[in-house]
Length: 488
Image 1 (cartoon, helix red, strand yellow):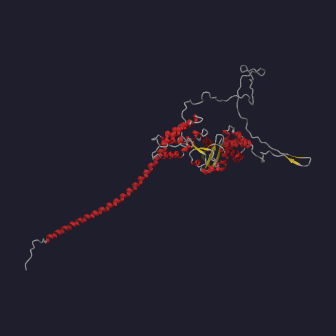
Image 2 (cartoon, helix red, strand yellow):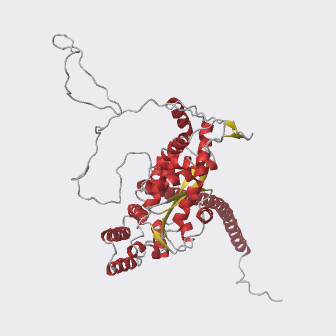
Image 3 (tube, rainbow, N blue to C red):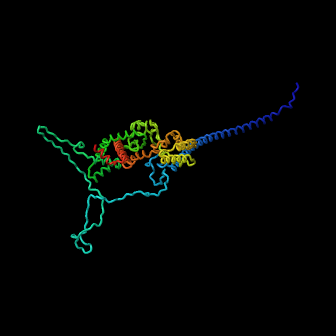
């Protein structure tokens, strides 16, 4: 048997050595892989931790961004704070600080103070004094000799105007009975105004109403005045009772005023908040140049208008600010208050100084109101010019970031039919200032008296103040009007 050729068979020892090297290399790689796995595991753990930290940082960043934006908004509000000069806010809401007023009026060029031709008034002597006191010299100031027998000559006069001693007058009414020859006994009757054993007369009733509704005095100070000055021991409860009594007597006059306002072709309306025993209520006024009706309600919505005045505006133009409740009424027409709009435009100009639209609109309103003052009847071509310029202004495209300006702009588009009606009808005023004056007394009353303690007390004030303001508009002395009511 012959042997095969073994020259091509590798050496066993060499193979074993190669295998050992491969095994060693594998072990080395396995060790490195384990290290890499450990490192990868650590990196994953670190990555999760970093992701969590990043998530927290993002959340914190969002909070800081929001806080930053809030602070920026607050800073903007502080720089452009709204008050009565640049918004519809009442003067009572202004901060108590000395500042230069920002009036809508333009300089007239006249000097301050009384103008040429103005008749001044001063304290004058009365031609027929009530009392005269003569003062004669008793002795010569040179030698001391008596002058009682000497003739006198008039040398001069001076007058002192004062009040007499104030004291109450008590009138006792006595009735008697007489028997006729026919045998019947007839007893006399008390006057119609004397209805109880002891009561306060018409003058005291009128004075209580006058001091409260016209002079804004609180009950406690009225009590002090009656006690210390008039020597009348009228308690605080008695004052409230007399206010109720006067209000009941004035109810017929209050309803007459309301009916007269209802018949108007142009009616101004406004409302303001009032504190009644800690709860917010609302005073409303509806007025014209001759009559002022004031009422109080528990809310500020459309239902308050219906409850107080009814939906009786179908023949009237309602002059108001932009409070939505007014536009829900069935008024024949509306007129927005241009003075309110001008103040808002001033505020928007201050807040968004990079635009000129508000300045142009403000100038248009000013020129329109000047036209109404200049002409008894504004020419049609001038009215057309105002409307054309207004339509051009409505093509304005505000910056999306000017949120308040956008809201104002949309409101103008929505109510554009109610902006310039005063140009076509001279009986329609361009502003609602008369209604603001009619309702401002409520704020003055509350600043002096604090608040109304009951809804009935608030109603009493509304009734009596309506009578007083109507009397003032008609040139009637409000004291005389209250005396007339008290005598009922």
